[in-house]
Length: 280
Image (tube, rainbow, N blue to C red):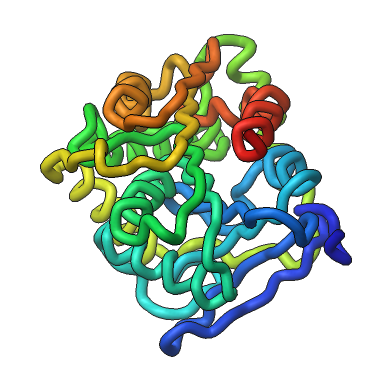
């Protein structure tokens, strides 16, 4: 096992690639295929749900990282998904991995698809959560929705994820509060917040992905687990159904009374399914 066993106290490290210092965390057993987590819009290392990180790291080696220009990583954040995916691939190779599993959440799921298409030999299996294909339904509206819910959050003194990631039902609101509390469990050596220019670059990249012509996902032959909530407003749930339909080796899980953050709301079930899928 790794010397550090939890998201709460794992050491943050850096690796240099082409003049960029990528910030990352590495935990879990050192056997089997590593699982590289690809993060969502505006997210840094501390935005992963500790229950998901620790749950999977109890069984598999887990790598979380800040892509170029995000959080504590240096460089300028690209404004296209293709460039971000190229950077993510370079980071993975820099760690010496020749084969990895990918867990891509939201924007991270866009990157995972590109990596699987451009570098298929690098990927063994993928989990695509709260995400969709290029040109997917409503993806080009993420910018407007994000700003709207950021304003709602400011007016109600809440994190925008309270509205963006969860349903408005009593159960959804309760799960939102629990999730946001978990994000603050790590108190020492927290990551830097994303900068405004990097946030804008993310939004531009997502908008371009939403306007992009669909790609031939039948070329991705990896085993894929697609997961989402049944009421995702950010990347509407039909995109997950479409991914599972177009990917030739995919299975689909939809969580009830859940939004964009369905894998966080249903973290116990998701971790169980994810570990089973990766070990299948």
